Amino acid sequence: MSPSSFLSKQAADLKPSGIRRFFDVAAQMEDVISLGVGEPDFVTPWNFIEQSVHALEQGYTSYTENAGMLELRKEISRYLNENYQLFYDPDDQVIVSVGASQAIDLALRSIVDPGDEVIVIEPAFVAYTPTVKLAGGTPVAIHTKAEDGFKLQPEQLEEAITPHTKAVILCNPNNPTGTCLGKEELEDLAAVIEKHDLIVLSDEIYAKLTYDEAYTSFPSIEGMKERTILISGFSKAFAMTGWRLGYATGPVDIIKTMVKIHQYTMMCAPTMAQHAALEALKNGSQIVEDMMESYKQRRNFIVSSLNEIGLDCPNPGGAFYTFPSIQATGLTSAEFAEELLREEQVAVVPGDVFGSNGEGYIRCSYATSIKQLDEAMNRIKRFVENRI
Ligand code: PMP
Image (tube, rainbow, N blue to C red; front, side, top):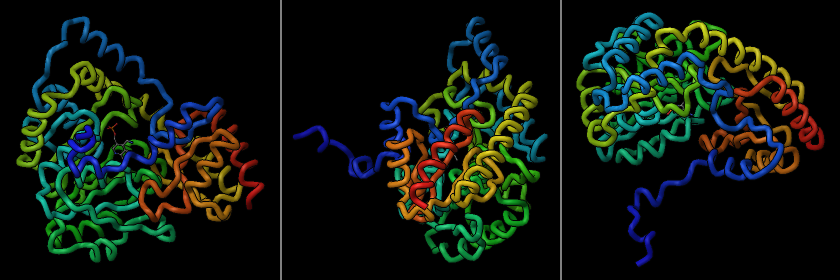
């Protein structure tokens, strides 16, 4: 009996993330500029760190309540109310999780039965399809189109719905395209969701990183709060990826069920990270604004550079990703990424890892300094010049 024969079929069939596989190679090379990982280049603001250290010094080293510290849940509730006019009861409509990643997992495991279909809108964040499968559901992909700016069209949603459809995962702003849907576009999707009585997982982890228009949170659309699990976290806008802290809010019965699973599988999110998050929500808004301004400048720089180079790149409304077309080079996205890494030591992510309609595109993160971005653009220019 070999150890691999003990693996469950479900787990054995999962493919490793296309992003990680690629970056393990990059990590072993020298002088690599990474536009690859979806991670802020900022260190967590000092006052967040200080509050965490302070809490540890005071002896806050035990578990918190399963759903997270009540004080933090109250702050999350206040924050959502203040920013998006959404009220969630901190007692039973908010759960603090180990990153948004765990909130997605808990949400899916709380609502999916075997045979239920969950719609994933591709190009999509790489975790959605595997977590739907691990929850026992069947992922159903919708492919948004470049000519629609990779925005999901209500007709596409309508077409993908079957009698087995239970849920839709929305990601706004989107990873990897940076596309941001506005209020009217969300209202059109909400009408289809209401008509077919579906539930929505709305992943809004990049909500604070939106650059051009006022942001609309999906549950704030009329009739949607009762059928939406809002997922968010501290990793991106607050530059806290390593702290592993996220949250979900939603209807009482669903959040209670998520807490039930959480209580058996995780107990609670890390206590010291919860203290840092409390400070982030209480006193972090100016720092977040400043980081957002910096991302906006970088976005403007990278978008104009990529277009000058000849890689067609629309202006993304949010997150910290661009999704330029590499079709002019005649290379596949995997070839482009591999050859660019080998020849010019710039790491980007091939678009097809986010869904087959991502073929012909690459994801470039601009969560890196303008100096690094500038050098990366020089290298990409040299690489592309030989091929267009
Ligand atoms: N959702 C999206 C869309 C993401 O891009 C990411 C991180 N790349 C996550 C969720 C997970 O974030 P966290 O670090 O909070 O688990």
